[in-house]
Amino acid sequence: MDTPAVAASVLCLILPAVTLGYAFTCWVWPFKHCPRCHGSGKRRSPMGRAFRLCRRCEGTGRRLRAGRWLFNHFHRIRRDAR
Image (cartoon, rainbow, N blue to C red; front, side, top):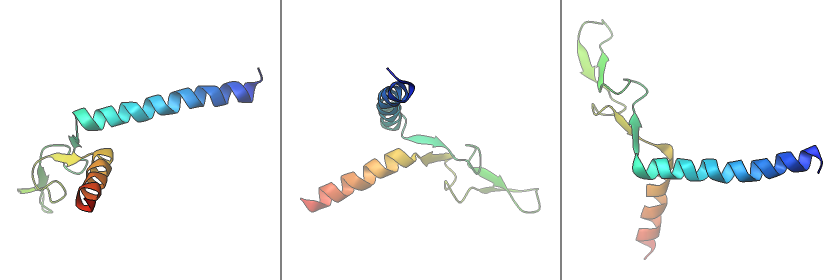
């Protein structure tokens, strides 16, 4: 076998494994830590003394993963089409 054929074969095996792994992660752990507040749910005020709730996660410290958001979006479209 030549090198491009081996590389394509390996890519065809790795890509579905990574996709299924991410889908499994989105199913088991639909939330991730908020990148803005690092999962605390609080942000420092502009002056640096007081804390405020993070606007991005609304103070929960968790955000919905992109894959889970897409799953929920398509599920809602399918449900509404019935």
